[in-house]
Structures are given as structure tokens and as C-alpha cells.
Image 1 (cartoon, rainbow, N blue to C red):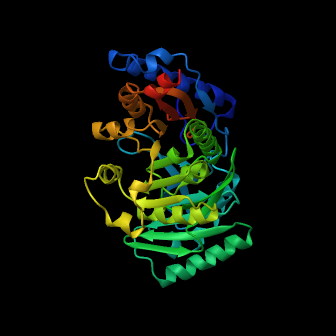
Image 2 (image 1 turned 180 degrees about the vertical axis):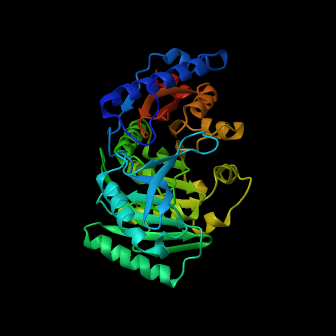
Image 3 (image 1 turned 90 degrees about the horizontal axis):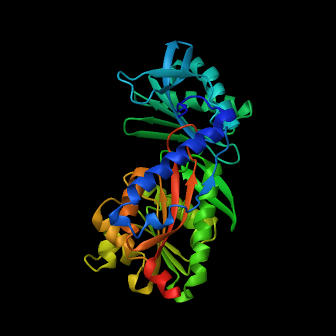
Length: 402
């Protein structure tokens, strides 16, 4: 196996990196799913050809976080920490070819000009960069001190200076119980999908897919799965439930292919971005609601009533959910209650960020569902991480169609 890369890229060997981790994940799925418990699942589909979405070999990462190593009053370096190192080993870097040119330009200009102001440099311990598709960059400065008016004035001068040098930038200062914004605290990505352009607002410090190029492939996978669903259900049955919707990246892509969509998320900040994204994408058939996956299950089964549903005039009796879209956290579904809930749906579009948790969940789900499509998305080149997409259909539906 090629060694994972943290601070560099290796375009010459990119395909080898990708091939090795795809082979590793496929071996994991074969090992975990070719068991008596899932004898009706993956075992009869071991030759299923996965769809592969490679990354750009460089310039793929649209957000990055760097620690700061101070050298003296006028110099600092960016740094990353070596994984699993004890004590933590700091690796100093000046540039990062994994990020696009806009972020590398911002890194160079901040490193060159920020130290001229001691009020900005003092107690700075981390700098984060978030880039949109128009090269706008949000730069977040993290401090171990309170941010005062003098700091704000110095930052305004720095921003003006960097803008005069051609950098389209906004700044955010973060300290304990403080968030000060100069400009925007978000960027916008526009994905060119098979269904048309999808515009998504990403806020600083909230989850977003870091690799826009691969995210576009992920959206196309979800869209094409939704198109397949649309071909096999009546209009009255074509409603979508989405869990873990975040700021609505997948929601905005697939919503026009369904009659109605109910998308849920627990975090308030991405929910606010999701509502902005609905307006930007002219999505009118979708409701976003702040509920956990467990609360959704309780609401649908009548265990609990929620004022949040009533306030948005959402009556679950108006929905006929036959399709579930899920993009769970790294732990996956795992809990048997969540797995039973998922298995109730005729069609499941499952986006996974962990092959291990996906394999665990599929051991349960493939007892009732067949894997119709399997995709691998290389969100994090030169690492062992590999995102997956699975399209599952109830076996009873397939048998009835024969």
C-alpha cells in the first residue's frame, strides 16, 4: 500500500492510490456481507461493478484548517498534526497543493501581511480557509484572547490591504464566546449536475463536502437514483424523506424529482442555510424541519407530537414516503431501531462516509433490500478514506415486478 499523504499530493500516482483503497473497501464488503446473516444480500451480487468518481489530483479541497507555529514577532508557519502522534507532531507547511489556487494565494498573503500587526498575530493559534466557486475566500482566525475594537480595526486594515492585492476575502475572528465577521461568513458553490445547476451556500464552521468536484459526482448519483425511483412509482407515492440533510446540498439536487420532500436536520445553522438554498434554487415542494432521526421516527409512528411540525403546518398524513435519502455521520445507522426504520422504505439512497459502518448497516439492510447500485467517491485523495453511495430496493418489489 502506498503511504497516505497529509501535507502533499502525488498526481503521478493518484490512480494507484484510488485503486488500492477501492480494492480495500470491496474486500471489506465481501468479507462482512458474504455471511449467513446476509446470504440474500451482497453474496449474490459480489460481481456488482461499482461506479467510480475520481477526484482532481490537485486543487480539490475547498476548505482547510491549519495550526499556527509562531517563530518570532514577524513570522509564523502553517502546520498540520501527524495523525496518531503522541506527543502531537507538528508538520510545518507553506502551501498545500491539495487546495485550489485561491486558498494558496490567501495562505501566502495572510502569512506575509498579518504579522505586521502584533494585535492580529498575538495569541493566534489556528487559521481556516473556505473557498467558493468564484474564488471568494472566508478566512477564520482563532485566538486565545478576547477580540476588542483595536483588533477589529487592525483586521479591517488587513482585509483592505489584501483586497487591494486582488484577494476576494472575508474574515471571521473566533475566540471564547466570540464570533466577529468582516464581510461574509459563507461561500457559494454551484454544482453542474445532470439536472442543471445547483447553488449551495456553505457557512463557515458547519459541515460541507470539502471536495466540490467529487461532490458534483455524488449529487449526480443521487439524482440518477431519484430518476430511477420516479420511473417506477406513481406520482402520489413519489414523496421523499431525507435525514441528516445539513444545509440541503442533496435536497436541492433531488427535490424537483419528487412530489413532496420533507428534509430534517438537528443543527440550526445549516438549517438556516438550507432555507436560503431553497430560495436560490427555486425549490417550492420541500419542507425543512429541525428534528433528529429518532424524533422523525417517533413523529411518523405517532409516539410523539412536535410543535415544530405544527408551526410549519406540516401534517405527516399528507405524505406518502416510499423513498429515504440518508447521509448519516461516520458511525452510520448502527442502532437496530434506526436500521428497522430504514428497512421500512421501498427505496433507500444511502450516502456513507465510512466503509466500516456501511458494511455493518448493509448486513442488516440486505436481508430485505437488494443493492442495485454501488458507487465510490474519492472525497479525500491520498488517504484511506473513501465515501460510498448505495441504492437499495426492497426485494419484495423486485420479485413482484418479475
